[in-house]
Every structure is written in C-alpha cells, then in structure tokens.
Length: 272
Image 1 (cartoon, rainbow, N blue to C red):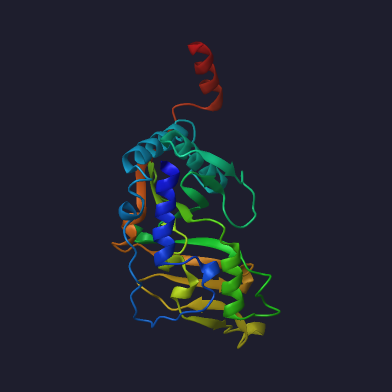
Image 2 (image 1 turned 135 degrees about the horizontal axis):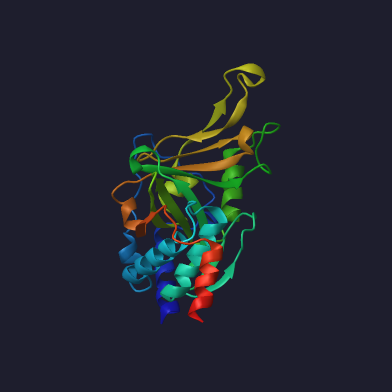
C-alpha cells in the first residue's frame, strides 16, 4: 500500500512541476515575480508520510546522537542519521551512498530518492544556503559556458526526488535542528525559475571577464555559480510561509553529552 501511495505523490508532484531533465528549456521570471505555488507536503504525501512518527523518530535519533557528541550533525553523519530515522519510522532504506562524494542521490528509500544536505540558518533563521553540483565540465575560468548547457547538466544529474536538508542553529548550550523535505523541482531550487546573468570581475586580472553566473531574486531565493569556487552551484533559499510546509521534523538538542564511547561501552556491558 505504501508503494502505491508514494507513486501517487510523485505523479502529482511531477504533473505540477516536471523534473528538470524533462524541461531543459530556460524559463525566465521577472525580478518581481512570485514563484508558482506548490501544494503543501501534507496534500502531496498525507498517505505516505506520517509526520508524527517521523518527528518522534527524528527527535529520538538526534537526542541519542547528542548523548555522546557535542559536535553538530553535518554531511555524511546526516546521511547516517537520516537513514536511521527513515528505517525506524517504517520507510525502509534500500541504498545509501555512505559518504560518497559523487553528485546525485544519497539515500533510496520507500519514499523515493533523497539528496542529503546540511547547512546553518542565516541570521534570524529566515533563510539558508546549500551547495550542490560542481559544474566544471560545463563552465569555468577558461570557458564560461552557456546557461542552457549549465541547466542541462544540472538536469542530467538529478537522479532523486527530494532534497533532504538538515538546517541548524548553533548556540552555546544547544542546537536547533530543522528537517526540510523539499521536492527537487520546487521553484526555489529549480534553476529554470530564475533569470541568469554572467558575473563580471571588478578588479585584477579578472576585471571585465566572466567570473561566474548569478540569478535574480525571486521570493527571496536565488542561485549563483562562482568559477573561483570550483564552479559549484549554490542555492540561497528564503523560508516563506509556503516553504514552512516542507518542514517535516524539528528538535532542539543539548550540547552537554552524558557519555563518551568508553563509558557507553561499559554501560552496555553492565546491562548484559
């Protein structure tokens, strides 16, 4: 039954916003345009995602991690945590990248393919930025490429259905974690939602030359590519009221571990 529900979710999502691999044509929105709305996640996946169970498993896993660690959850650790949460919530994980640096999906589960990202909130917890593909094969200092080629390359690499983004706010005594499950073709992370322009150097040897690509700002979100940063795609995501619908779990964890690995091992031995 779960697989049937999941198929309906993706049918509805892709019907509204086809995956970029099927929509290579560049669409420009005026600077003042509003992004077209997506139905909230509850409408798309009510049958497939149990928010209460997801949030409970998420909270337990995050707090369990911080019983031993005070370091924030980042990068490959999030993949491990995310997989644990999904399995315990009843959404079996079939495959993982296990920290591989290859672009594309990181987790395949009964809900679909996930690309895992971690980041921090910007000031005020109203936005965040995440990095994506390195696009050196289609643009760089030697050849800036064209935006059509760049978007086609981004489309080609999207072999997942959701960005699974763990956003944190780090304080001295605790850390807030928010988990966003964002459809990969959501307008905020869809390069065809924006108008792209070349970035021009202002000083030194790069003065007047193309040093990257950038978009206009739509609903507070934007994208950019800087050749000096390995031509990596950066997505600047503004958290609108509509975006909050994709926040599937949240918790706050203390940065005061009760155990280290040795004391945890000894406690386990005592329980046997």
